[in-house]
Image (cartoon, rainbow, N blue to C red; front, side):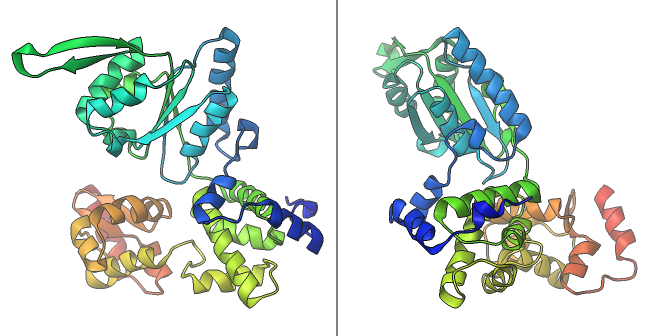
Length: 356
């Protein structure tokens, strides 16, 4: 249900809200929309409840909480939760990423600068270099790192004590984590795709913060086309706002939303140009499959990792694509979504390919 008072703005309130926001770029706007407390975080009720218990228990005992691993597809709020953890603990947060930690010395320098109780956030932690990962083991367990000085037979290892800290790791591919690293996290939160009602709340909240006048039907339509992902919902909201300001009266209605998303190539199921290109190539060029992901990527002019990590998760979830041992297969739903009729025996051949 929508609260009309939340999304209905008079002109003075609208201008006041906008003037209160810094006039910055899209990246800064995205930061503005991030919740700062667990109570403000929309969705993921199970993870929020579990994380609240972990943090409250640590606060009562006066110690840093266990290390936290957040796993799930991109755009679901892993970075926001890491910042919330630091905020809830009243601690500083240091942010880096797995690919940035190429050498053990990079990690050692960062760990040695942590103060007691600080939060270290490593995004895409499954991509951390092996030497840095092995150093991280000791740091996570004993709050100590061994710095190697010199080379060859004369090299010596100097133990360096570091302040107790909490590591928050985020990964989109939990299966790529090594067992020793995964086992050192005291809490693992598995992030799930959002439902339409939860995304509706995300859109309404963002519209309120940005001072955007939006109707309940407009926010519901944006939520429905956001592929279960808050990041996409916020991005679509900003694009629909642009359309509303340039080609309408500035208010986001159902009609304005549909017209705007048509301009931006987002269809009624949330598929964009690349998603439809993948399905179209699979159906029209390869007869529905099976076909390897590398071949499919060449057909649409993209990298295989882009097709595999950006397009496929939602297409599989939407029931339009299946991953089989022989390759990718379009389902009958994909044919219908493209306005095509699958071959008469397509259902049987597709079913057999799933188990070959």
